[in-house]
Length: 128
Image (cartoon, rainbow, N blue to C red; front, side):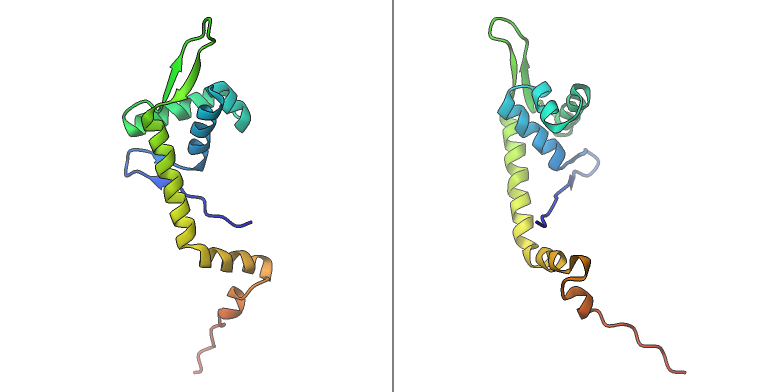
């Protein structure tokens, strides 16, 4: 399956892409940075740094962590965190829709199976 992978560079303020977005989604789903990190096969320290970096990019926290205790604590996405995820996923869907034809051509042409190679005419030698 071919798909678009979207990375958005925010002009000197950082970037957001599929890894950071998936991490935020998993934090929201699992209620824990540690559980989200485990699901992605990364260390807690690395996940925490990504969350901090992403929050710095947007100038406000994207997650809200509460300390443990009787209820056990946990981590949730802030309203801004939910909005960042939603905006990214919308942009991703729009990019995929806009590039569907080209992605299909590339997919079909992978490993010589499609028409992209046939549509490129070899340069003819200049006659001198």
